[in-house]
Amino acid sequence: MVEVFAVASGKGGTGKTTSTLALGMALAERYDVTVVDADTGMANLLFHAGLADADTTLHDLLLGDSNARVADATYERFGMRVVPCGTDLGDFRAADPTRLRDVVATLAADTDVLLLDSPATLASRRAVLPIVLADRVVLVTQPTVPALSDALKVQEYAASYDTGVAGVVYNRVRDEAGVERVAAQSERYFDGPVLGSVPEDDAARHARRAGEPLLAHAPDSPAAAAYRRIADELAVEPGSEAAVADRFRRAVVPDEV
Ligand SMILES: Nc1ncnc2c1ncn2[C@@H]1O[C@H](COP(=O)(O)OP(=O)(O)OP(=O)(O)O)[C@@H](O)[C@H]1O
Ligand SMILES: [Mg+2]
Image (cartoon, rainbow, N blue to C red):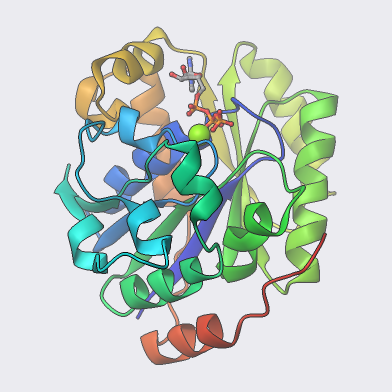
């Protein structure tokens, strides 16, 4: 049984990659978790996960002339399976984004929770693909009007591909009382619950610099504690692997969005 989540935001730098790894590590206490850097144009999960030197990455799996197998690009790290993506622009251009579908289908056959770290913008077919493939999105946003309106656009895209909303995570929160007011309002607009809020916390930046996920680098930090609470709120609704794999294989990759 597996559920696939796209971690998305509609804006850059909201904390998608930080959140993907933090939720992955927290969920790994209860589930078999795989995280994938599906931000194939601006990959950076490898830098957050100590995999900057990885020999084989998702890019190799998306290249037509490569013999790499999914297992070759899958690394056991921090209690999860991690599939990093390379940062070479030539590889990005040569990559066939539709192959992501087959990679995700292969990974989904052998895990409980699959988290797809998604690109910031949804302006191209390859950028929207993780949302097309996911069962539901986790929206990571700041509690400001422009960030929320972008997150609502992601929800709209997701709905148009029959992808639901698992919930909203407010990240980099400086004013807890303010976010509670926003959360009360935003529950009316989002199709999923507010899962929780993560404070602005230097530990997140330090973890990134150290090349470790937040929950490994600073497990006792306020931000790490917040992510563990959020993971507890996230109700995983696994479907059968066969159904999920079949859905991926048949997923229509949008021409333009
Ligand atoms: N709660 C937090 N407190 C302080 N800094 C944070 C927090 N969450 C993330 N950051 C920092 O913000 C920066 C952006 O975070 P991250 O890379 O996770 O965002 P992203 O949404 O994946 O960005 P991109 O759109 O570029 O992929 C990083 O330097 C990260 O360490
Ligand atoms: Mg990122």
